[in-house]
Length: 272
Image (tube, rainbow, N blue to C red; front, side, top):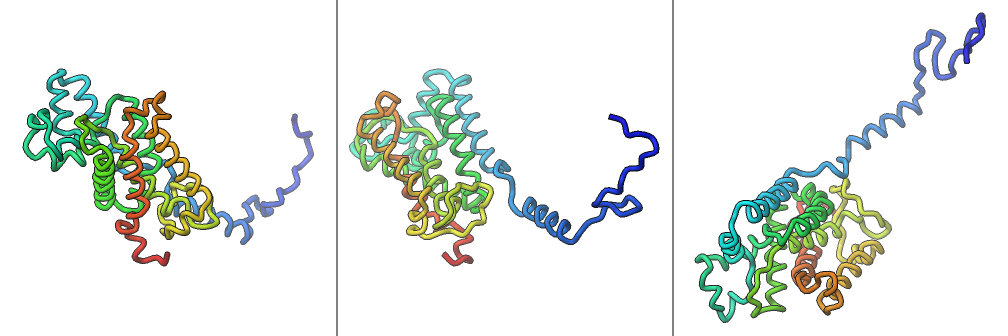
Protein backbone atom coordinates (compact mmCIF):
# COMPACT_ATOMS: atom_id res chain seq x y z
CA UNK A 1 0.00 0.00 0.00
CA UNK A 2 1.51 3.31 -1.09
CA UNK A 3 1.49 6.52 0.93
CA UNK A 4 -0.35 9.32 -0.96
CA UNK A 5 1.80 12.19 -2.19
CA UNK A 6 1.86 15.27 -0.10
CA UNK A 7 1.16 13.36 3.07
CA UNK A 8 3.96 13.67 5.53
CA UNK A 9 4.19 10.94 8.15
CA UNK A 10 3.72 11.98 11.73
CA UNK A 11 6.85 11.85 13.85
CA UNK A 12 7.24 8.51 15.62
CA UNK A 13 6.56 8.88 19.29
CA UNK A 14 9.89 7.41 20.32
CA UNK A 15 11.98 9.67 18.07
CA UNK A 16 13.01 13.31 18.37
CA UNK A 17 12.19 15.87 15.71
CA UNK A 18 15.59 15.35 14.10
CA UNK A 19 14.92 11.64 13.73
CA UNK A 20 17.19 10.48 16.53
CA UNK A 21 15.82 7.72 18.72
CA UNK A 22 14.60 8.92 22.09
CA UNK A 23 15.65 6.64 24.94
CA UNK A 24 13.89 7.05 28.23
CA UNK A 25 15.57 6.17 31.52
CA UNK A 26 13.13 3.30 32.02
CA UNK A 27 13.99 1.80 28.64
CA UNK A 28 17.71 2.12 29.27
CA UNK A 29 17.48 0.47 32.67
CA UNK A 30 15.48 -2.46 31.37
CA UNK A 31 17.88 -3.03 28.48
CA UNK A 32 20.89 -2.91 30.78
CA UNK A 33 19.30 -5.44 33.14
CA UNK A 34 18.51 -7.82 30.32
CA UNK A 35 22.04 -7.55 28.96
CA UNK A 36 23.51 -8.12 32.40
CA UNK A 37 21.34 -11.20 32.97
CA UNK A 38 22.35 -12.65 29.62
CA UNK A 39 26.03 -12.19 30.40
CA UNK A 40 25.88 -13.28 34.02
CA UNK A 41 24.74 -16.86 33.49
CA UNK A 42 26.25 -19.20 30.88
CA UNK A 43 23.89 -20.92 28.43
CA UNK A 44 22.56 -24.28 29.59
CA UNK A 45 24.30 -26.06 26.73
CA UNK A 46 27.69 -24.37 27.03
CA UNK A 47 29.32 -27.70 27.81
CA UNK A 48 32.56 -27.68 29.86
CA UNK A 49 35.59 -29.11 28.12
CA UNK A 50 36.06 -31.94 30.61
CA UNK A 51 32.61 -33.31 29.74
CA UNK A 52 33.39 -33.35 26.02
CA UNK A 53 36.79 -34.93 26.71
CA UNK A 54 35.21 -37.72 28.77
CA UNK A 55 32.64 -38.49 26.10
CA UNK A 56 35.36 -38.48 23.44
CA UNK A 57 37.48 -40.89 25.51
CA UNK A 58 34.49 -43.21 25.97
CA UNK A 59 33.83 -43.19 22.22
CA UNK A 60 37.46 -43.73 21.19
CA UNK A 61 37.94 -46.62 23.61
CA UNK A 62 34.75 -48.32 22.46
CA UNK A 63 35.59 -47.78 18.79
CA UNK A 64 39.00 -49.39 19.30
CA UNK A 65 37.41 -52.37 21.05
CA UNK A 66 34.81 -52.82 18.32
CA UNK A 67 36.68 -51.97 15.12
CA UNK A 68 40.38 -52.49 15.85
CA UNK A 69 40.88 -55.26 18.38
CA UNK A 70 40.22 -58.87 17.62
CA UNK A 71 38.04 -61.07 19.85
CA UNK A 72 40.95 -62.27 22.00
CA UNK A 73 42.42 -58.81 22.55
CA UNK A 74 38.96 -57.38 23.30
CA UNK A 75 38.43 -60.09 25.93
CA UNK A 76 41.82 -59.28 27.46
CA UNK A 77 40.78 -55.62 27.77
CA UNK A 78 37.67 -56.64 29.68
CA UNK A 79 39.68 -58.94 31.91
CA UNK A 80 42.23 -56.27 32.78
CA UNK A 81 40.04 -53.16 32.96
CA UNK A 82 36.51 -54.26 33.86
CA UNK A 83 35.49 -54.51 37.51
CA UNK A 84 35.14 -58.15 38.64
CA UNK A 85 33.94 -58.47 42.27
CA UNK A 86 34.85 -62.14 42.58
CA UNK A 87 38.53 -61.38 42.06
CA UNK A 88 38.68 -59.68 45.48
CA UNK A 89 37.61 -62.75 47.45
CA UNK A 90 38.15 -66.40 46.72
CA UNK A 91 40.07 -65.88 43.52
CA UNK A 92 38.54 -67.66 40.57
CA UNK A 93 40.80 -69.30 38.04
CA UNK A 94 40.05 -66.61 35.47
CA UNK A 95 41.31 -63.90 37.82
CA UNK A 96 44.77 -65.39 37.65
CA UNK A 97 45.03 -64.26 34.04
CA UNK A 98 44.61 -60.59 34.92
CA UNK A 99 47.53 -58.19 34.80
CA UNK A 100 49.26 -57.61 38.15
CA UNK A 101 47.65 -54.67 39.91
CA UNK A 102 44.38 -54.85 37.98
CA UNK A 103 42.45 -54.97 41.25
CA UNK A 104 43.80 -51.49 42.02
CA UNK A 105 42.70 -49.63 38.91
CA UNK A 106 39.59 -51.54 37.80
CA UNK A 107 37.28 -49.77 40.35
CA UNK A 108 37.81 -46.70 38.15
CA UNK A 109 38.77 -48.06 34.71
CA UNK A 110 35.53 -50.05 34.37
CA UNK A 111 33.69 -46.74 33.94
CA UNK A 112 35.47 -46.10 30.63
CA UNK A 113 34.21 -49.31 29.00
CA UNK A 114 30.74 -49.82 27.54
CA UNK A 115 28.79 -52.79 26.27
CA UNK A 116 27.58 -51.21 23.03
CA UNK A 117 26.96 -47.86 21.38
CA UNK A 118 23.51 -47.54 22.93
CA UNK A 119 24.96 -48.03 26.40
CA UNK A 120 27.58 -45.38 25.67
CA UNK A 121 25.05 -42.98 24.15
CA UNK A 122 22.67 -43.15 27.10
CA UNK A 123 25.48 -42.47 29.56
CA UNK A 124 26.75 -39.61 27.38
CA UNK A 125 23.33 -37.92 27.36
CA UNK A 126 22.99 -38.11 31.16
CA UNK A 127 26.59 -36.98 31.54
CA UNK A 128 25.84 -33.90 29.43
CA UNK A 129 22.71 -33.11 31.41
CA UNK A 130 23.98 -33.53 34.97
CA UNK A 131 27.74 -33.36 34.52
CA UNK A 132 27.59 -29.90 32.96
CA UNK A 133 26.40 -27.96 36.05
CA UNK A 134 28.57 -30.02 38.40
CA UNK A 135 31.70 -29.52 36.28
CA UNK A 136 31.06 -25.77 36.05
CA UNK A 137 30.71 -25.54 39.79
CA UNK A 138 33.58 -27.79 40.89
CA UNK A 139 36.16 -27.02 38.23
CA UNK A 140 38.10 -29.68 36.34
CA UNK A 141 40.29 -31.06 39.15
CA UNK A 142 37.51 -31.40 41.72
CA UNK A 143 35.14 -32.74 39.07
CA UNK A 144 37.58 -35.50 38.13
CA UNK A 145 38.12 -36.38 41.78
CA UNK A 146 34.38 -36.41 42.48
CA UNK A 147 33.70 -38.58 39.42
CA UNK A 148 36.43 -41.08 40.26
CA UNK A 149 35.15 -41.35 43.83
CA UNK A 150 31.65 -41.93 42.48
CA UNK A 151 32.93 -44.75 40.28
CA UNK A 152 34.74 -46.37 43.23
CA UNK A 153 31.71 -46.15 45.53
CA UNK A 154 29.47 -47.50 42.78
CA UNK A 155 31.80 -50.46 42.31
CA UNK A 156 31.97 -51.02 46.07
CA UNK A 157 28.17 -51.03 46.34
CA UNK A 158 27.92 -53.56 43.54
CA UNK A 159 30.62 -55.73 45.09
CA UNK A 160 28.94 -55.63 48.51
CA UNK A 161 25.81 -57.23 47.06
CA UNK A 162 27.59 -59.49 44.56
CA UNK A 163 30.85 -60.46 46.32
CA UNK A 164 31.39 -63.74 44.48
CA UNK A 165 30.34 -62.68 40.99
CA UNK A 166 33.00 -63.47 38.41
CA UNK A 167 31.69 -61.38 35.53
CA UNK A 168 32.87 -58.06 34.13
CA UNK A 169 31.05 -54.91 35.23
CA UNK A 170 31.46 -51.96 32.85
CA UNK A 171 29.93 -48.55 32.19
CA UNK A 172 29.99 -44.97 33.46
CA UNK A 173 26.64 -45.26 35.24
CA UNK A 174 28.27 -45.05 38.67
CA UNK A 175 29.83 -41.72 37.71
CA UNK A 176 26.64 -40.43 36.10
CA UNK A 177 24.59 -41.41 39.15
CA UNK A 178 27.03 -39.59 41.44
CA UNK A 179 26.67 -36.48 39.26
CA UNK A 180 22.89 -36.75 39.51
CA UNK A 181 23.15 -36.88 43.28
CA UNK A 182 25.54 -33.95 43.32
CA UNK A 183 23.31 -31.85 41.07
CA UNK A 184 20.39 -32.42 43.46
CA UNK A 185 22.37 -30.49 46.09
CA UNK A 186 22.20 -27.18 44.22
CA UNK A 187 20.88 -27.24 40.64
CA UNK A 188 17.24 -27.60 41.70
CA UNK A 189 17.56 -24.93 44.38
CA UNK A 190 16.26 -25.26 47.92
CA UNK A 191 12.77 -25.11 49.30
CA UNK A 192 10.43 -23.15 47.06
CA UNK A 193 12.38 -23.86 43.84
CA UNK A 194 11.13 -26.61 41.61
CA UNK A 195 12.96 -26.36 38.27
CA UNK A 196 16.24 -27.99 37.32
CA UNK A 197 18.49 -25.20 36.04
CA UNK A 198 21.81 -26.48 34.62
CA UNK A 199 22.81 -22.93 33.63
CA UNK A 200 22.91 -21.79 37.27
CA UNK A 201 25.99 -23.54 38.63
CA UNK A 202 26.41 -20.77 41.21
CA UNK A 203 23.25 -21.48 43.20
CA UNK A 204 23.97 -21.99 46.92
CA UNK A 205 24.40 -25.57 48.03
CA UNK A 206 21.45 -26.63 50.15
CA UNK A 207 21.27 -28.89 53.18
CA UNK A 208 20.07 -32.45 52.81
CA UNK A 209 16.84 -31.52 54.58
CA UNK A 210 16.21 -28.56 52.25
CA UNK A 211 16.99 -30.66 49.18
CA UNK A 212 14.50 -33.29 50.30
CA UNK A 213 12.06 -30.46 51.02
CA UNK A 214 12.08 -29.58 47.33
CA UNK A 215 9.24 -31.53 45.78
CA UNK A 216 10.97 -31.92 42.42
CA UNK A 217 14.13 -33.31 44.03
CA UNK A 218 12.14 -35.65 46.24
CA UNK A 219 10.15 -37.02 43.30
CA UNK A 220 13.32 -37.35 41.21
CA UNK A 221 15.08 -39.34 43.95
CA UNK A 222 12.01 -41.50 44.58
CA UNK A 223 11.64 -42.37 40.90
CA UNK A 224 15.38 -43.04 40.54
CA UNK A 225 15.49 -45.41 43.51
CA UNK A 226 12.17 -47.08 42.72
CA UNK A 227 13.19 -47.76 39.12
CA UNK A 228 16.50 -49.29 40.13
CA UNK A 229 14.96 -51.36 42.93
CA UNK A 230 12.36 -52.69 40.51
CA UNK A 231 15.16 -53.66 38.16
CA UNK A 232 16.94 -55.36 41.04
CA UNK A 233 13.82 -57.27 42.06
CA UNK A 234 13.55 -58.79 38.60
CA UNK A 235 10.61 -56.72 37.38
CA UNK A 236 12.89 -54.95 34.92
CA UNK A 237 14.16 -58.18 33.41
CA UNK A 238 12.17 -57.61 30.23
CA UNK A 239 14.08 -54.34 29.73
CA UNK A 240 17.52 -55.80 30.25
CA UNK A 241 17.39 -55.57 34.03
CA UNK A 242 19.58 -58.62 34.42
CA UNK A 243 22.46 -56.80 32.72
CA UNK A 244 22.02 -53.48 34.54
CA UNK A 245 24.28 -52.85 37.54
CA UNK A 246 21.55 -51.12 39.53
CA UNK A 247 23.59 -51.51 42.73
CA UNK A 248 26.28 -49.25 41.28
CA UNK A 249 23.60 -46.71 40.34
CA UNK A 250 22.26 -46.51 43.88
CA UNK A 251 25.71 -46.44 45.45
CA UNK A 252 26.92 -43.71 43.11
CA UNK A 253 23.83 -41.58 43.64
CA UNK A 254 23.97 -41.89 47.42
CA UNK A 255 27.62 -40.89 47.39
CA UNK A 256 26.98 -37.88 45.16
CA UNK A 257 24.05 -36.65 47.23
CA UNK A 258 25.71 -37.10 50.62
CA UNK A 259 29.34 -36.24 49.82
CA UNK A 260 28.99 -33.41 47.29
CA UNK A 261 29.54 -30.73 49.93
CA UNK A 262 33.01 -32.14 50.66
CA UNK A 263 34.07 -31.31 47.10
CA UNK A 264 32.11 -28.08 46.64
CA UNK A 265 34.31 -24.96 46.87
CA UNK A 266 31.28 -22.65 47.14
CA UNK A 267 29.92 -24.38 50.24
CA UNK A 268 32.88 -22.99 52.18
CA UNK A 269 31.97 -19.39 51.41
CA UNK A 270 28.17 -19.54 51.30
CA UNK A 271 25.83 -20.11 54.18
CA UNK A 272 23.71 -23.25 53.81
